[in-house]
Image 1: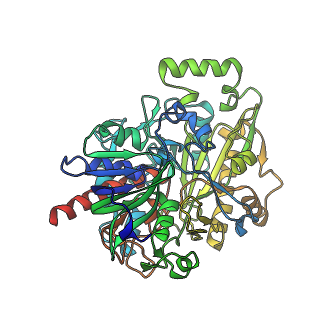
Image 2: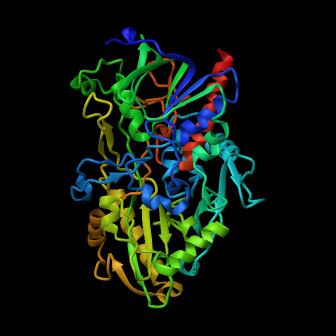
Length: 547
């Protein structure tokens, strides 16, 4: 059936496909004008599970197919042919409803590099106001931060003696103390900041969607799987989607906006006829635009865990999950909104340069006074804490040079696209992760930590040479859930969207999510994705005003 012969559906000003971090922001900002009608489509369901809202619930949602796409990559040559599970949110709030709750903006230089790559209007000075607009920083008076925005940002609810020792050990190893890694200078070691409010997760749905979902000019449809964008010639006019097996359409007078993320947005572009012509023809899809960059430039943070057994008598998070200790933690959460149940994916952040000639850090550490079965985590996404006290120090390279791709494997929208991550393909990435492991080991050997550690379990004291450390990284590492770049912004032949985030070659179609990042930012990607959507909202409203 051609687009012209499809049954007519409801008409809106804007259709947003994907109610994740970006989609929730867009829905909020666009419907602030009561004259603007918006349809928000989400393939997943509502965020009603308490495991979404209790911070430590991510240990369960990380493996729950009801709220998680649980994509599986293709066999990856750089990691011994392993396939990696990529959790992505399938629920209102998207990945912000299931992530590890860490708030990181990245380095100011990241955004200046975007500008140098042809993305005018995306330097740090252009982006910073939108980080501030989104933010409600709990620590009042913190320079470079703001209050009054929808997204609550807090410090950890409870510090831990082992985490305090990690910070001191980092200083002893030559890493400066930094109590605000989201400040002007990222380098250093300190506690993470979290998207938590009063001990509960502050997802994009909680921050942006819940307060405005009563608006009569906003229609939210859950369990709505987008099949393709509809066109009249080169202009996007609506979307074909299904709910409970029924095919439906909706029309957009102004724009269709893709906010499905770095996997779903390029997949939907390809299904809609925008992508590499040869790929589209292979699956019988009419080519609207031969766009070779759609699905390319995939970048992700690859993390490698180092595990340490702590001495008997040293308390870690492991023991807090057992018996009466766990009962006490549940009571602490119920009455104080503190303790184990408010735990994020990591306690301590460290941003470090692996070489003295670098201007800015190139490695990030996620450090937690706990150890888990890494095989179960990376192969099954099951977080199983050990019985004995432990510590995990996990480095990842901030700006990998290795790039992969996303490509459809079928014209059926319900079939997952192929993911080729291409981890550790570049020699710089290999060198950087090895140096990151060495620095992590130096932290563990510093006096404040060495006095607490009984033994290095992994990689183990016998793994010393660069060759063996790299082999360990290939064998054990995996995603830390930050895919970006597959519909990149720019002016070069591989760019998919222009600096206004308009899809090149058509009209009335934008992409607003992490897929537009031309390069991966230096840190966790949720806060930058929210910033992108804040900025895009102003662009879209300005374009409407000018029309």
